[in-house]
Every structure is written in C-alpha cells, then in structure tokens.
Image (cartoon, helix red, strand yellow):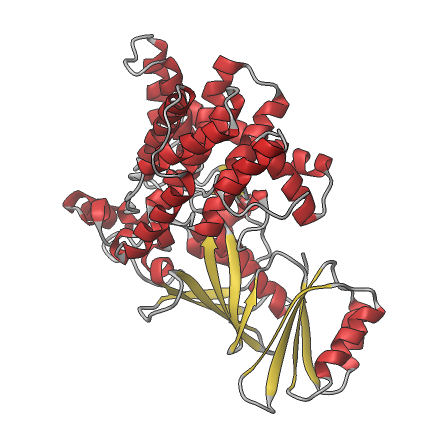
Length: 299
Length: 220
C-alpha cells in the first residue's frame, strides 16, 4: 500500500486506481497506521454503529435536556412523517428526525458516538438509518458507511478543522453533512468521484455557519442545525448522483472553510458571545438557566 | 498529521453534550491524574477561551472532575462526578480566566495533596482529541493517545542516551520523543511516547540512572 492520503484528491485517485471503495482505502489505512487487524477495526466500528442505533432509538422515544431547551422534537417529526403528508418527502424527513433524535440524546447527556464531534453527532447516523430503509444495506455496508464518512472527516480534520471553537459550526455540522453525503453516495452505488462532488456541494452550502450556542449549551441552535445538515447531505447526494458536479474542487472548498473559520471573530466561535446567543431571548434564556451569573465556583 | 485514526473522527463513544468540551475535558483531567500518579486531594482548574465562557453549559467542569476520578469519556458517572468527588474527599474549584491563550479550549489543572503539587496545561483540539502543552512550567507536546514516560532530569550530556539505552534493554520502542528545558544546564524534561505500557521494573531502573530527578508514566 502507498503512503497515506492527505486530501480528497489523493483519496479519490487511489480508490479509482486500485478500483476500491473509499471505505476500503480508509480501512486499509487504519490497519497500516494503528497496526491492528481488519477484524479488530471492523468490530470497533460495529460497536460505534450500535451506539448510534441505541441513541436514535432512545431519542425517538422522547428525551429532554436538563435545561429544558431541547427535547421531544424527534417524536413530533416522526408522528408528522407517519401522516404521509410530509412535503419534503419521507426519506428526507426520516433522516431529519433521526438526526434530531441523536442530538436530543446528546443534549440530555446521554451516550452518543461523536461523528465527527458530539455537537454534530446526529447527521451521519440520521442519514444512515433513513437511507437504510431505502437501500437495504448489509450490516457490513452500514459499517462501511461510517468508514467512508470517516475518510472525508479525516481529511477535513487534518487540513482544516472539525472544532466549532476553532472553525465555527461549518467545521462541525458542515463537515458532518459533507461526510454523510459522501457516504450516501458509496452506499447508493455511486463512484468515489461522486462522493467527492457530494461532499463539496454540501460543504459549500454550509460555509460561513457560525457557532453561537445559546447559554453556551449544545442545544440551540445545534439540534436543528443537525436536522438541516442531514437534509443538506441527502439533497447534495441526490445532486451528485444526478451528475451535478462542483465547479470548485472538494479540497479547495475545504480550504475555503478553513480560511473562513480563521477570519471568523471569536464571538462567533462557540463562546456564546455573539449570534443567536447574544439575542435578547438568547440572553434571557441564559439568565433563566444559570440564574444571571454564568461564572463561578463549582464547589 | 494531527488526526491519525478514523476513530478520532467516528468516535469517541461518550457522554454528551460536547466532544471538545466534555469528552476532551474528561481526557485532560484523566491525563493529569495519570501524571500525578494518584487521586489528588484538591484541584484548582483554570479555564481559558471557550472553556471559560461555556464550561457550565458543556459540563466541562463535571467532565474534568470525572477525569481526575479516572473516568473514561463514556463513564455514566461523569454526570454525578461532583458528588463522587465529594464522597472521595476531593475538593475542587473552577477559575474562569480572561488571559489570552493560543488555543480556544485550554485548561490549566493544578492538583495536589499533602506530599506534592502539579500543574498541567491541556488543550482540546476537537472531536475529543487532546494535547498536553505544559507540565510544571515545561513546554511539551503530548497527545495522550499512547503510553508515555516523562523524565525530569538535570540538563547534562549522556542523560538522554542513558534513558534510551535503558528502554532498549527492555525492548521498548520509542514512537516520539521531545526534550525541553527551562534554562541551559539546569532542569530539563524528556517526553517519550512508546508503543507499549511500561512496567514498574523499567520505571525503577530509569529512576536509578544518574542525574534523573523524577520519572512518571501515562498508561494507554
């Protein structure tokens, strides 16, 4: 096996040249980097998949956070979906509700699998379990979905950032949505290049997204941003499968995301000082939850 | 490359709500405990940047205390770590700082008991991954991903060779190594990341080497 892939271009080139899936390139790289067996790596990812399944299941039953800011929306969305009247379509709403379910569990300090972070943990599983109903993948294909998503996330983490504090919400939910979109393509039988196009299209539409958590909690607007990240991922995957390409290459979109993150003021990078957190209602919620003073001793 | 494994991206399995502010914070606390070598009696936790602004909402505080109690990122007891710490007789205090730091998610943990004190600076770089950037005033770079040995020594020639030879004797492979010092000819620190956990026998042998002041380890 050759050296590591450092960017999406190298990842796609290798997949095409060796006629392998992107998930396979990621699995092989993991074996090489960590000196672990394929079986070991597959078992660990299987466990992560199980954690995701359990979180969605829990969220769809209805959970509420301690602050009371979030919870119960996944249930509302599923009930609405079951009426069959959803305007945006069944699969899309299923993905959205399952992304919300995961993030509601996260907000309630439940157990989740960070993908790539906890604040953005809903997008990849939300889309996976929705697409599952349409494509009927094997368990191995579902595990591979996570490796494909991981391969793209790996590139972003090493060349830009997946941290909201460093790069804004575009780095978190934006990356998660791009990762999900690329993974949908592989599961739907698209090419590695189409995965790259889907990632680029998704990321382009998440650029500039600020991280402005109300009261500093991973709740508002995080949960709903996961919903829209999932929707973005599904639509961009459809666009790429239809043959639509990104005029700006995937790696350059990732570079643009990094540059935007660098020039974003710190008030808009997870400090709860700007954006929605600084609105009158945002401030009011903050004082309601924390009783005015947000700082103090934990003893 | 900062991120080497796909499980840095798809993972960790953790208690919500934030990988950098909760899981990363728990890991920083746990490495501090590992370096201290035992459960401290008290902890003063200085928080900087985004940590200082949003630590309560992200449960960064309970996560760091959970780490100091040796809990992993997915340990349900993180939620009740304040009570667990009180039961264990550990007191703690959080001090939000306004000073500038290089990374927005930075914590300086000062811990101690009747025998000694330790100060450690850690940053949470995203997705639950962390780096330790300072120990007792020494700048360093430690990922916390691998077992590591930290050797405080006099800044004399031969020290590094002696330590390397000792590790070679036990067939321990060095993955990454850094040496830093505050001032020439005085105290220095070796940070050695190794491929396998280091047992007590090796630690004892390292301690017997000339000009070595202190040896600690971080288990995987």
